[in-house]
Length: 265
Ligand SMILES: O=C(O)CCC(=O)C(=O)O
Image (cartoon, protein in one colour):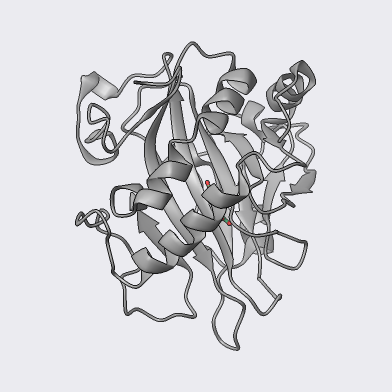
């Protein structure tokens, strides 16, 4: 596994994302979390605790995009991945933060494309969905691949430098027509659109700023694309009016929201 470098931090700051070419997490941790994902998708929770209410529920259509909220509370091997110190090291190195906490997690399972079923993720800025945080809060995401993500897996696509375009107030995670959506985005004058595909090895991770535009297309590989979106915050973040509700409901609970840098003991 590689260590974060100052060049990685410079790339993160200038592009609004960083894509690790090398695995960030050890093979056994990734393999455990992959099995854990399949358990949680089947509705089996080794901790006895269910995830938070989610759009996709066990028993739902296997061909649909599956997004399950807070799976780390339902599965010990998923917890081990989400709270792994290597993620904390990377997140702290890229952001320069004094501390980093996981505040929300999403299990993402993109099945192979089928006729009549589309599993694209529309262009969006995560900040659009995170109004529970004060303006200017330092929020970003580690997206961890549980298997290799190639160009035909429906990889995420980041728009380079879009974190400097401000809050666009026009996001649609479930939008399917990425080209049409893109045409309607209110980009600032002079903005130039350049996309990067997030191609990763198993155990690889990308990190993106909460204003970075991203989406993803069809998975044509014939096998599922499994990942976790691990949403992170630093000491430069605060819930609106310091409220604990909705997406901030669990931030004081270390059994839901681990501090990953420095490590809690
Ligand atoms: O998995 C995808 O294609 C999109 C994930 C995403 O939007 C995110 O991690 O913020």
